[in-house]
Picture 1 (spheres, rainbow, N blue to C red):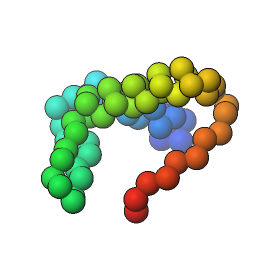
Picture 2: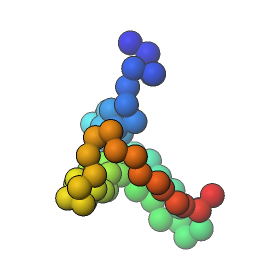
Picture 3: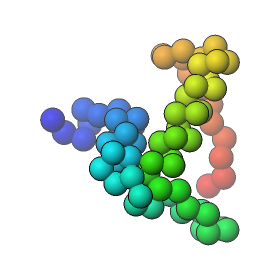
Length: 67
């Protein structure tokens, strides 16, 4: 099984289990950081919010963010 056999969420979940307290995200502008377990919690909250808004698996959404 190679890396391409996993979804992005599979990788987030695997890292949250394997490295819960390791830094996963660092915002260089203000120094904020998230561990893998904190990042997974935010991803799960976002997924719940999208589902409550009526977004389903297979739907397409757009994302705008700073580069």
